[in-house]
Length: 422
Image (cartoon, rainbow, N blue to C red):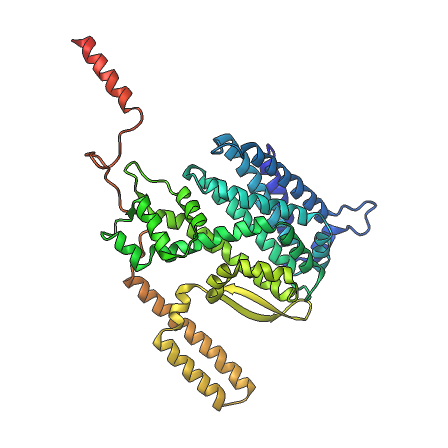
């Protein structure tokens, strides 16, 4: 990947040429009318993505038997992942709008082979990288790539009809990669539950002094008592923990490390599966996936907002968006509830359609202002929970850190120097 910077710049240039749903240029990428020879840049991009995925797969197999990926390996992985992220961004821009002809071109290309290969990599590399803190920077890059691929898949469904070709092909791809998809969903499920575990009253009783430190034995016991993990999941999470020199775990940092990425990416996975279920309502294979993903889908259900808009094809389309937890809290405040009651009363008893629409717009403006004002006040009064444990003083040491690995050599050198001096 010696030309990674140039490759990223090239695909970024193609992406920018399509910004703003530039349909004319999106179609030009596929076929250059009037030219003696035309190049289907959309298909060429997919061909490049597939070769890139195969290269990353080769990296993976090389390191699969090694406990950790060394620095040169991480550098190679990161370069390849950076390029892959840009390629997915570019493909997303090729089809957004939607550009239905580019969507169809991708649907009949080898895109699904590349997606299936990346699903394998996401499942197995996440399993490998989660177990060592020295690999977290690479894990972060991998999760960002997963996010970009899911966004591209969502764009493939944009504007499509129920039981259409693209929806069927996407389900086919998920079915062919069923074991990998189930692994990925299992990771999300485990990591999303961490916040529930560590914020529970029974868990906080273990950390009675609120230091953020806990023994591995207590951590495992807490997971067993909560009964939200099975034995295999507990064993996996324990393998991801790295106790300090005094055999204590910073459970706050551990929770933040895994819960937040799972929440960010898991939301888009939930949107994809929900969207796909509406495109393919009668596919029994998809229903089995939805059952497997039920815990993840239930987690995000309260945060999944829906609106319906008139799409470019003049059809009503459902669009999903994330509702922040803080917004839900503000929406349930007494003053907002009172405003809602007054609005609904007026909408039922007064005016025609024009007046009702005007009342709705006014209510939205007032509610947004009230919620923002209440949020700013509550933020001033509320402290953010700590993201990591308190600084730890190691037992038997006057300093807050244990002796470094060179300390015995230094002491030996000083003894030798003193002996020579004597």
